[in-house]
Image (cartoon, rainbow, N blue to C red; front, side, top):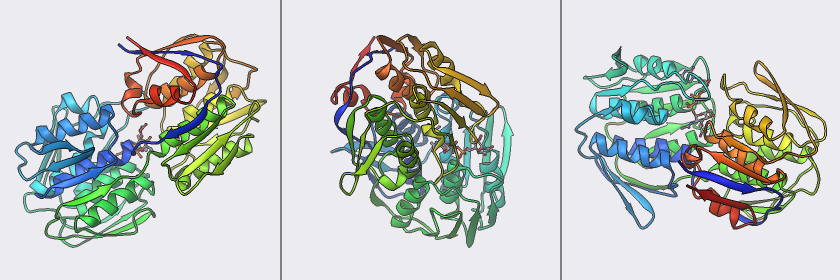
Length: 418
Ligand code: EPZ
């Protein structure tokens, strides 16, 4: 099982290139199931979750090929409209095939996603929304079957709570439903908007993606398309924080500054200097311990829950006490125990972490628990005194492409050990 060995103390200087968004690539790959013509996707990051989704598409019957850096999906033959337990247990985002399979083939059989480190992660909202489009939903033996032999019909959907992949699943079902679908309390994440842009290129009729009310007019069929997905805003935010926590000067390239605005505003308040460095680049400099600044995670355009752990790593060395409140997931503080082993002073009270900044952290042996927690441990290790060994970095490989190479290229003392 791979580990990272990191020796803290180096300030990062130079350019950190951002890869394509994992959370945009996953629904884009699922959307390719909606047509019998080839879909070509550019900017797909080579990370574990993408490999898992690609193997799921192949299991379903699609052909998936990497040609000159682009992923070509040909879903003309869908023999097995299902997502088996072996796949779903490793990646709950497999539920993204529910909507497209129900819409394209009239049936979908998907293993119920178990919980994960950060919470129960149910898909009840996905299922109730599909039922409102006319699908019959049955849950037996750990699987959910969505059946719509006569096809789906448009409906009036209101999500009781905002769900990103729930909105995406429903979008991919509604595009082939008969009539109009209105989705209210829809997720406004950039990845939802990016999916809608791909679907409209494929011939769908979607308006309002990126806002909380999305209108879809169903069409008979979709055709092939070519699309470049958006940059990964969570990787971009992680890199900005890497520059700040190491008192460095980094330029994060190939990003969309608007997508990380909630973070950059907080970082500026805490004392980092953030500036635009061209159309799709941000420069982050810091030459001091940060001021303690509170954050509360919210759905987009609020402060991203996927950046909470990384931001907290920075606050562990802040001057003062900060309150980090997690409103999206019920168990997303797994990184705090590991940060505490490095000398961080954090107390958890329900959904709130109270972080009392310390002068410094010290290197230790720690264990990654989930994708974003592992990123926070890397950030802390780069500023800690001495050596840190991070175990189970396979969590990181799920969503960060060659992260140790990118960080080493700007001065981090990090290596992958077996
Ligand atoms: C997406 O997960 C992202 N994953 C997550 O990123 C991200 O943390 C999350 O959105 C929130 O921004 C992908 O896009 C592949 P939700 P998703 O449905 O869609 C509850 C990462 O690190 N809920 O918006 O699964 C749910 O339990 C990952 O890249 C229900 O109760 O999140 C949570 O508390 C982690 N019933 C809240 O809603 C449902 O049917 C928001 O979840 C669906 C969700």
